[in-house]
Image 1 (tube, one colour):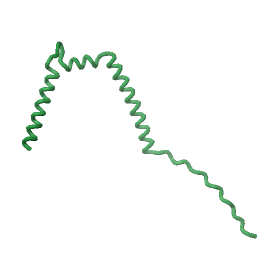
Image 2 (image 1 turned 180 degrees about the vertical axis):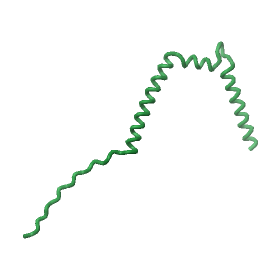
Image 3 (image 1 turned 30 degrees about the horizontal axis):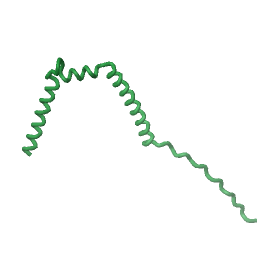
Image 4 (image 1 turned 45 degrees about the vertical axis):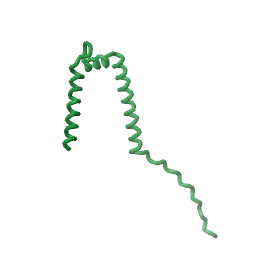
Length: 91
């Protein structure tokens, strides 16, 4: 139990140091976070994000439609009744 606590504490400290490094330590002129923002703010990246969002919306709509079909199936078509033969009483 105590070992588990120290393991989680160590993992938390490592994560905190990694986050601080990501946001505060420069790599060249910018930090890693600033480099990431610069990469994803380019016009091709915006266009790709827009296309991805459009496709995601379309897939979501199709999935909802299919789920609605599964939840509420259309009524089964009624089969016509076969004609019944009229039986004449013997005379």
